[in-house]
Length: 386
Image (cartoon, rainbow, N blue to C red; front, side, top):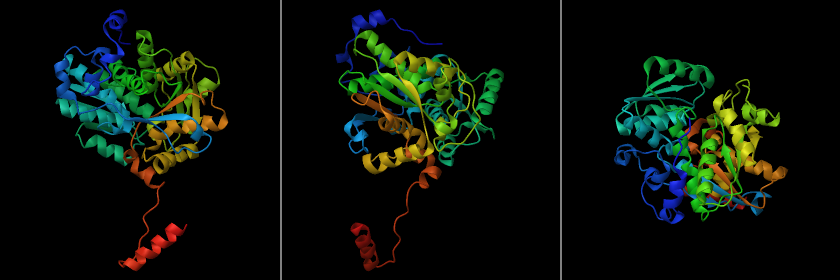
């Protein structure tokens, strides 16, 4: 299901000037674009989530250093991932509908976000997790004390069990592309991006894609702005997946209209490692084709390179799944990027602290010295000489 609005009335009553200097949470800033029936409930659910920063990358390697590549940092939301765009709205709608328990199946970021906002609102949270969830994400989920159930199998098995439990116990399903309000919250990414560019659409948007909720939502947001005349063109939407687990990329390359599951494989970008995206995969294919975009599969070493570049050259520490959008940009820049002369936006979706185990393997330890200044000086001399 999708939420629809009276766009003709919105076009008559709204203009970009109404949103240029708004203050408050994301829900408050884009209230007219959202299905909120009781705005007074926003104070009950918000954790102070604000529009996230977007800025142009300055130190990317050639040939990307000559392109206009912008970085949209959704890792600065309260639980450090893009999931905080949609969860406040989903929890608010649960309260409006009189629900007392909410549930989700997740690879870690969504479960943490749901648990945090449910705790804030005083609702019970049920989270199903697959086997391969980082210790960091287990911690940041369970700290809010939801009922956590970890199925010692892949994400798809956990999803099947979640659906069975939902039917039996009746909690409010907060999964993306199942609950339509997830799309409504996440589409605010598009509004902020266009506003930051002076109410202009980028030429291409690169989105980390597992199940597909993020790219579908962003496309809806850009379409709404275009329909209202806030922007005068639409971007190409590019879904980026890890090559070791890329069912949507495989379907795109084969020209299919549906997505077939692939054998489950582990990627350092575990946040977007979904072997059978079911409904989401088909919708992603529709979005990339309708927008003139594509699906890009990136290798593990390309993801690692993107993480390192963001940290060492741009000052941004991202988990691998959060950096994979930039990995897609850089890959196309090397191979021939159809949007190389335009504005490209890479969605950065999760902070590096979300996956300390994999992240720690990418960084070095400090130089250890004896407790004398001479030891420290020798280390400095050697390092600075290099």
